[in-house]
Image (cartoon, one colour):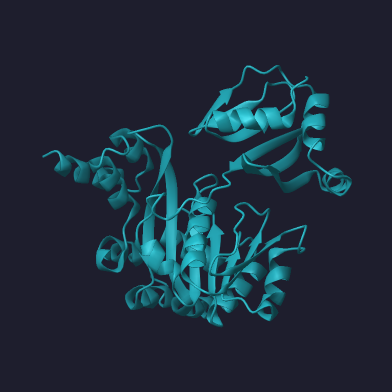
Length: 356
């Protein structure tokens, strides 16, 4: 195959695609607005996939991949886009998925995020969790919130990412971005030393293990604003998952810490737009009011959903409330919103009242 990786990536971006899949025995595949589409490029051989991947890796990364059989990295085509790259082995051949990361960081308003996200991002301390399945736009939302701080506040922001996705340039804030494997060995290692870097705001790309979660909560407790992501779908599940990582004898202490440090949980999912091409995010927002803090402390997280549904004055909203709003504004179709709703029967009744 004569085509090079840059050509494939330029074609991906030209087609408004989000991901390029490279696999032996298949032509390159694009994900466009959520759907996988085979391209008209020739079928790739094992040698093709190896050449495509190795064309963007140095010797050190190749050695790391050949030892671990896994590799995360970033790649940039200047003036076009950055890409988050995952290289893997499948059936003895090299495969890869490259996710396009726009060079321009979209704002909270560009993404149509709830306005309370601006207020949450300006809080002086505490833990803010952004959650959702893989590919739901968490990194994009976090970049918008970090950019909002960057524009509004003189402070020091440190990000720990695997790999670095959106590139921030200093505005009012000073931003240092650290990449796992390049600038530090792990999230936990970076967090252990972060206090000596005099940060005000810390972004932890992913809370993957007990040590990272524990260090993130401690950083939030000691007067820093900490952003982190989890692959959970709503606020109660996020809180339970965070607590369940710890041994039973520590869980009551963690509940108490979370009840004090947690500022908000922002959960999101992506839907195809009805008014134009592309996708739009729907959000569930939980703001940690004193009542929510009490429920966390008492282990009654299942009751938090009621507070979310009735907490509009604090900027809270359930996912279904936002989905109904998107349907009402004709930004998404009823069918797509229904498929994402948490309580389909209740969602149907709410939508029925729209057209009554």
